Image 1 (cartoon, rainbow, N blue to C red):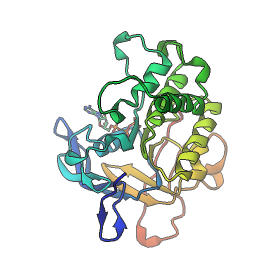
Image 2: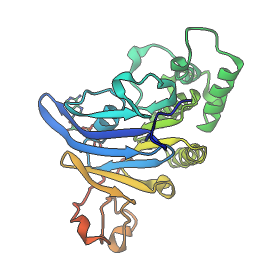
Image 3: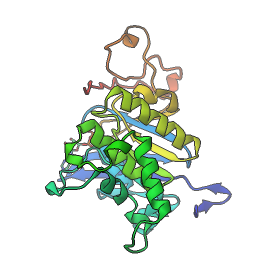
Image 4: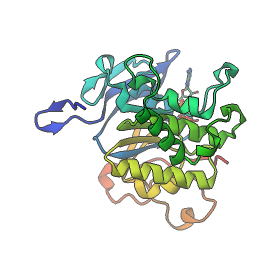
Amino acid sequence: MSTATTGTAPAPAVRVADAAVAYDNAAVLSGVSLDVPAGETVAVLGSNGSGKSTLMRAMLGLVPLSAGSVELHGTPLHRFREWGRIGYVPQRLSAGGGVPATVREVVASGQVVRRRRLHRATAGERAAVDEALAAVDLADRARDSVHELSGGQQQRVLIARALAARPDTFFMDEPMAGVDAASQRALARTVTRLSGQGATVVLVLHELGPLEPLIGRSVVLSGGGIVHDGPPPRPEGECARPGHEHVHPHADPDPASGALPDIEVPRRD
Ligand SMILES: Nc1ncnc2c1ncn2[C@@H]1O[C@H](COP(=O)(O)OP(=O)(O)OP(=O)(O)O)[C@@H](O)[C@H]1O
């Protein structure tokens, strides 16, 4: 596995430099810059429509930049070829045109990018699929159609699909959305394990939830740009009470960093 280097320091897993994205000429992001060092776990937070998914999709070249650049592991996106290193968990399972697919088939499809050409799965690949299914507690549903699964279970299938290719850099877009509490804890354990193994994990989240102990850095989007990049804002006092559902930077220990807006985080049940 190669990692491009600049001098002696390894290249960041992700480098976004002065990036802008517009849909139909309407700016969604502008002047966004951030580095995610290899091995780091970062949460991207922000209110609905603040551009979290757009930023993640831009990091993967799934939406075009109108300005700026993105590098993955030191390589400009347009030249990046090591897609086997990348595991992407999109926000939700696409309808898929009603094509019947078993849970196992969908999970195994995550390995296609690893394969040079179509061939029967090797024992190692089958083992990786079994491992991924076990990691999300769906081993007993492997033969079922994904369409029979609940939304939360389908989300776990997407996570298993990303795990099956054994990438080292994960992009997860709201992996907790619509996932029951037990699955959320299982996912938190999975992310903890990946992080412990040195993986880079970029998560779009509405709230930190069970992932909170893992998140040392949060990037908060608002008004098309980054308004906070550092330790996650911690709720205190009134805002720490159960049912209080927003994340915002409270007493800022560093007055020089300026005032930061409240970030409303709606509950998603
Ligand atoms: N394909 C698209 N075409 C046009 N506008 C889009 C498209 N995708 C997103 N947008 C708009 O861009 C803005 C940012 O959307 P995005 O999904 O990135 O935000 P988000 O922070 O991930 O929101 P949410 O928390 O609701 O998922 C929104 O105003 C959205 O309506």
